[in-house]
Every structure is written in structure tokens, then in C-alpha cells.
Amino acid sequence: MTHPHLRRFDLPFQWPTPSFQVVLVRPEIPPNTGNIARLCAATGTPLHLVGPMGFRLSDKSVRRAGLDYWDAVELHAHGDWDDFRQALPLAADRVHLFSTSGTRGLFDARFQSGDVLIFGSESIGLPDPLLREFPDRILGIPMHSDDVRSLNLSTSVGIALYEALRQQQR
Image (cartoon, rainbow, N blue to C red):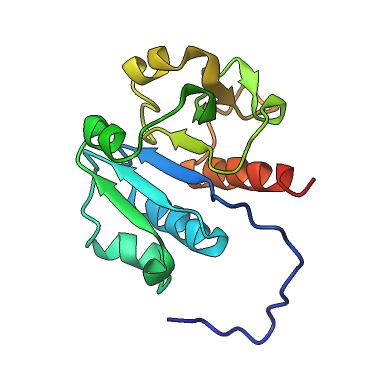
């Protein structure tokens, strides 16, 4: 389904091939996942949801947050991390994990088309075994205030994905 919008202007942009991959590990909050799905639809980015999830994809709140863009999302649901790894083999140098424990900043990373951007759940982030598997690939998003524990998951995905896309414009 296409969604015509009279005020939309097609901005010049070089979309990467292959596209990036966004992975949400154990997402818990339906509206965040719906917002991320809409972002992925807008950027042509496949979205991988790795369970167990805190909701069903058929939940009304997930559908509402993604509006009527779900048909435009290349969506892959995986029962758990092992299922995901079988479906999408990972090269260690093409993986970027996002965590508040990241010791390298997002803007220090060099992204290449086809890279995999991995995010954890809203309440606990990425599981420790996953962080231990890729210790040199953990990135953080700079935050000015010590009073803020973390950014919203959908905000973090948007920041990271558009920085990766921006780097492909060179």
C-alpha cells in the first residue's frame, strides 16, 4: 500500500545497498516497537525482532504505533537469539551493539552498508552474554546529563540508524 502525502518532497539521498539491519532483542513496549517499525519502513531497513517479546505483534498498541506502515516493513520475527543467529549469520566486524555501557561513542564508529545494529530491551538493555560476545563492538550514545539513565529505545534506534545512513552519503 502506498501512502501519498501532498506535502512530501523527495529529498536527494543515496540509500545503501545492502541496507542496514535493525535488531531488537527482547523488546517490551509495544509503542516503541511500532515507532521503530515505521522508521524501518521509511528507510527501507529490515527489522528483526528477537524474542521473547513482552507483547504479541497482533497487539492493538503495536499496530497503532506503526500506523498503516506495517505492510511496508521487511519484518523478521525470531523466537530467541539462537534462532536469529541461524537466520542471519553475524560477522563480528559488521555488528554494532548499543548500550549505556558502551565505551565507544556512536560518532566514533564507522558504519558500512549491510551492518547490523542491535538494541536491547527497554528495562535491562542487551543481555550480558551478548555483550561479552562482542565486547569491542559496544557503542553508546552521548548524553549531557547524569540525571538521565538512558534514551527511549525508539529514539536511540532513530539516532543510530540515521547516523549510519548519513555516513553512507560520503
